[in-house]
Every structure is written in structure tokens, then in C-alpha cells.
Length: 109
Image 1: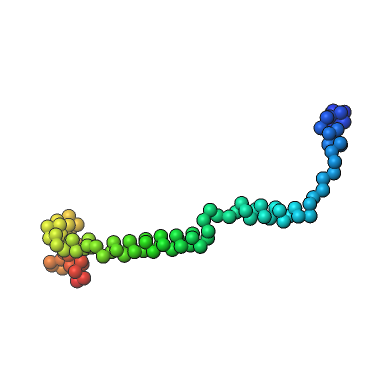
Image 2 (image 1 turned 30 degrees about the vertical axis):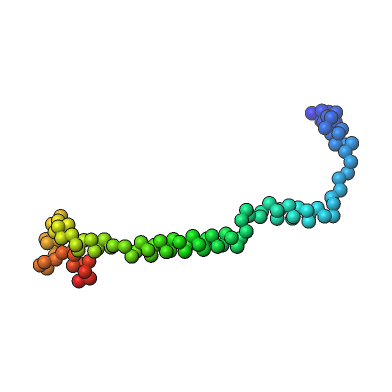
């Protein structure tokens, strides 16, 4: 095995190769190349504005949706649903108070 290494063409080629020297500006070139690779596609200020705008739109949509009709208001108007719900839930057997309905909760008692 040792004899194979001594006669190997790769080792002979490496023995003929010249000495490599590093340029004094090598580290500066590497840092510049790394900075160029890490630049985002959009400027950071534009990314911040897009994030703030999307958050503003989500917030506005959330509050706009809150101003619509509430489910509690629909329950008060639908007396048939309230009576059916009270019967199915068995509220009359659980609560000892007379004339109890789910619509009382929606009015704020």
C-alpha cells in the first residue's frame, strides 16, 4: 500500500504545483461578496411599510366586521328559536326561576 502512494500520479502532480499566496485584500473581497448575497430583494423601508399597511388593513377589517349585526340581536328577534332552545337545553328543569329564557342574557338582564 505504501508503494502505491509513492508511485501515485496525484502525489507527483502535487509535488510539482507552485506555492499559493493569499492576497492582502482577500478578507475584504470575501466580506463584500457575502454582503452582496445577503441583500433582500426589496428595500427594508418598503418591507416595513408593507407590514404596517397589512396590519392596518387587518385591524380595520376586524373592527368593520364587529359593527355588523350581532348573533345575540338575531336571537332576540327570533322567539321561536329561543323557545326551542330552552326546551332542548332543558333550562326549565335546571333553573328554579320562572320565565327564564336565553333572550334575557342577550338583553343584558
